[in-house]
Structures are given as structure tokens and as C-alpha cells.
Image 1 (cartoon, rainbow, N blue to C red):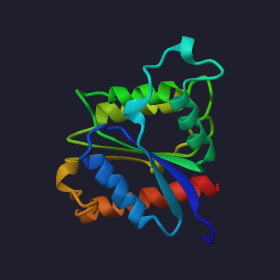
Image 2 (tube, rainbow, N blue to C red):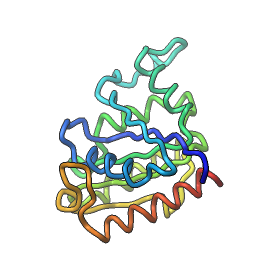
Image 3 (cartoon, rainbow, N blue to C red):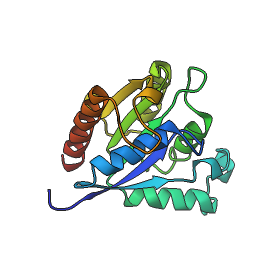
Image 4 (cartoon, rainbow, N blue to C red):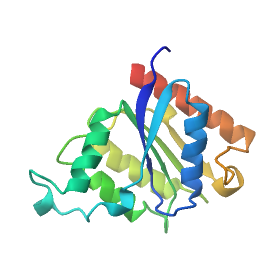
Amino acid sequence: MTNTKNILAICGSTKKLSTNLNLITAIADISSPYFNITIFDGIDKLPHFNPDLDIDPAPESIINFRKLLKKSDGVLICTPEYAMGVPGSLKNTLDWTVSSSDFSHKPVALITASLSGQKSHAALMETLIVIESKMTQATQLIIPFVKVKVSADGKITDPITLENVQLLLNAFRELIEG
């Protein structure tokens, strides 16, 4: 592939030393020949979704987020599971895209990396389907017990996890080039 694709990465955790953020760092490193990954760092700065505020012009932080989405060729979401569900900040972020249709037909790779992650992953899939994200089974991954598989310096230390992430990235690239 001669030109890199612009990917917007959204971390579902607002924690500064998040394992999911470390995972995004690892993915940015191993995918650098074909993806230019920009990490959206404003998930905790978006206002609570309110349809009364979703007017023209929307709040500045929402305008900026939507611009990043429009410029991206695809979206990578890496998220933990909180209390058997989707982190509130991530759900809020996705809610802001319903009326703008910014996710409609946008290629998405979803990685739920947590202790378990299955319930959150299923709930996120429902939301991503409703907002018309373009996904396949191969662009989804659950990484259980992630804390022992990704290092604090942004390296995937578990060989099976690394292989699964690489398979996901290949499928994501194919979906984007589709």
C-alpha cells in the first residue's frame, strides 16, 4: 500500500494511564506502514448529549470531534468494560454522532479490552449497528485479561493477542480499501 489511511482512535477509558490507551499506542506502532493514527483525547471534554444542544452550530467540542471523524478513513475504538457495560463517556461520544450520521458507512474496528468485556462489546455492537458503522466479524476483537497482555510502554506482550490484533488490522485495512 502506497498511501497511509487516516484513522481516528477513540479510547473508551478516560484514565490517563489506561491499558486501552497503551493498546492504541501499540497498534499505532505496528500499523504505521499503512495507518496514520490520531488519538482523540477529548472524550472526557464533550458535554453530556442533549438533543437541544445538537443544533447548528453545535458546541465547539462537538464540531471539532465531528471534523476529526469526517477527515478519517476509519475509526478504531479500544475500550474497557465498566460494570458489565459501555463506559459512559464512550456512549456519550457515540450519541453525539446519531444526528450527524458521521459513523454512517464509516469503517470501524472495535476492540473491547478488559477483564472480560463480552457484555460491553455486545452493547457497543448494537450501538454501532444503529449508527450504521461499516464493520465485519473480522474487525471486532475481545481481549480478556488485557492488563497482562499489554505493557505500560505500549507493547503487546502476549503472542496470541499480537497475532489477533494483526489479523484485525489486516481485515480493517481491507474494509477501508474495500
